[in-house]
Length: 467
Image 1 (cartoon, rainbow, N blue to C red):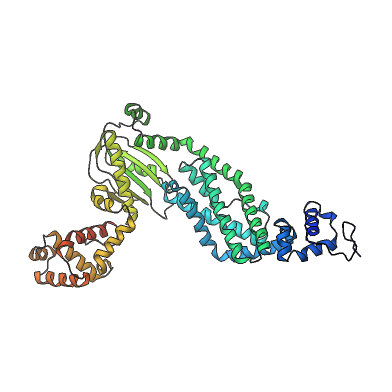
Image 2: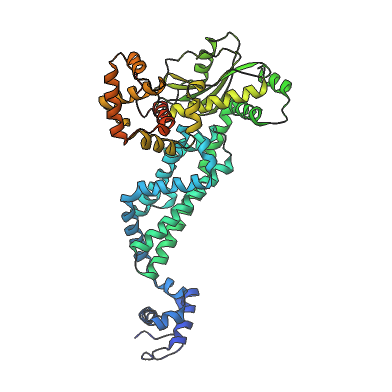
């Protein structure tokens, strides 16, 4: 018969304090404790009194490693159908902590979000399949996202901090999942610790690979001067103590002259190899033979200044890009103002989902730009004011056109009829229909209706009469 430790007889049953003493020995020198005492400790530790006496560490030591691995697989498999949800959580957590990430272009944002989903899938699938962390490779999504962030001007510390934020969020989600799918309080602590340690181990394993990809991209870019040039141009746009003469000489561009600014953005879904810089120079060459100033701000965006005072729209390129155009302006302040306007015009074009190869002039969308800073509130205003008139039907379009022409004709029925080429009674009938749909058209709503119609067209919510 197996003799119990501490020279006790085979039938001696240790009390709680002896159990505690035995457990301490087991934790630090498990080979000293006999099989008989191990079985007894395991049995008695299920008692609330003895469990309280033993504290936290003994229950942890009593959990079988196979039980932990089995529970880890169970939790990971339960998370498999929720991978998209968790990937989105990782992305939202990173963006909330680092809102500056949103200044990057659409392609970089898309790649960074894909990296969040890829990270979650890697961890969940590895834990489901009991894959050692050392065997996990850097995914294509993470490589592409890392390189895109390098192009967008983020530092090594920014990139590694982003991955740490993502892993922190993942560990929180893992702990919540363990609580949901592993009801055993003793086992759940081990399972939560296992998943957290695995995720942190993965991050440590891939960190050097991530930095290698980042450095490779960052070293490539300066060869064509794009990052340094973009940083210089950004400084010109913000530095209050800028020496215009020095900056103009460095950039080989007359900052004290006339400017028309452009912002070129890659159209969603287009090839990432679209030569935005070349397109910008080609567009500028059609306005003036003088060389423009261009700078690549990120993968999807090139900014451009044409040395001209021509207010006409630049020629639309036959390329998968969208162009925002500022108004002509003079001097350093004009250089900055025209750029802001071009950026706002480009933003309105994105909100309106304008097709590739279009030019959006700020002068044409100034009111829309002003009112759509909060795009959600702007769309809600339009829908509240126009109601059924925003629908994509022939009747709604006819009523919208009639209402807009009526307001533009100082609410004169005959002038409206003449402009539309219909009888004035037809105008009256259509306006009666419109009034019925909108619940009346009181005079104090005239400006609201006119603004809603203008915004709806500017944001692409409805088609204009010329479409």
